[in-house]
Image (cartoon, rainbow, N blue to C red; front, side):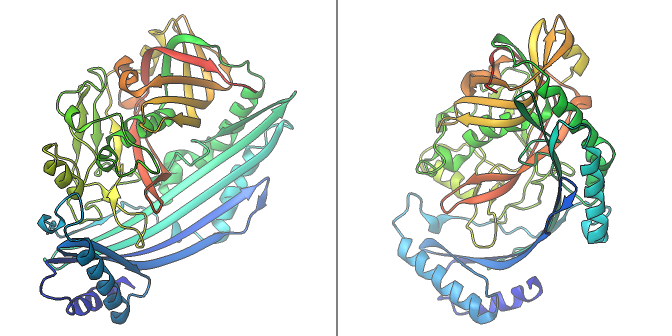
Length: 489
């Protein structure tokens, strides 16, 4: 499909009037396969193929139109609709869209893949899932076992009237194991990396090896589920908190990522996903966290889920520190939001991070790869520094207010730390805090040996709704004097 988009798009664009200062076409093709084995029974494979194109036109205003018909006639109709919307919005928006300077970069990007997921047959992949599912059958108290494998291949072509041309090819793989155990009236769920697929990376079948999916995840998840049904409820009180990377990813996502999306700060999400406690005048001086906190936007990190070379407005992407030594430096905002902020008197910069979930959505400011940079502390050193605290793994619940400030998060698995040593396993561990002060309690940051690359396929935002892929990499981190509590059974 994308092979023909370039020629047909340029011919279709020829009908635009001379007043149209700029146009762009973003063609997308995506193929997905979801496989599942539950309690040793293979569920029906789910496969999908989706393709289409988004047209953008600037003529006084900015207009979008999407189509699944990428023939010359289909794209011509989309150009007409986009142009009509551009003319209708001229002079009626908060920012002068006609003054936008679209990027003109060209280039290519491709996920690093050693063994494409498609190189294995369907029976082979189902057999792997059967093996993982069977390995989790450790005890009669295991009442549900579920192993899944989700692979996606996406191709995107971006063209503009200024001669920009980018091609990007992604391959994503998400393995998951989830086990439910029940005993004496207590039910607990344990998963390999979160019930919303936290272990997700770019790459091929080698991702399974990096995850240890076929070698040890089934037995580990089952063992820890059994530990949880026999464990006491997490203690409550003010104590130190040691968050492992599979929970840090959620902490980063909700209390750094969403608050720093520039369109949210500008008020665009107020009706749906809320605003932000961050304001335009905070950048460059606001203390977001302790001096140990360094947060990067890094679309270049190997294997991470939201890596790319260009955002969906064609802006070249490169690594940048969002928070440096605890000080807020720049927002997660693309070229349009940056221009809107400048029009309000705030030249605060941003990054290449306008993205769309598919061909039928316009790009908006999104988190991409948002990471806490490693520190210098080893895991044993962090544990030994804690007189009383809880180590928490793997998010299972979250609640945060509409300004992304006050939050309460729950985890699947906890371990009490007492007198510098790991002690008993506890179930239903939770903690609460306020984003504006929580990160200032960051007391130790793990080194490279504690660092893990994770993410989520399910970040929702926008009207109409867009669910998009996000990457989060982090070391283990210690926070001092946090409100910790145990949840109900």
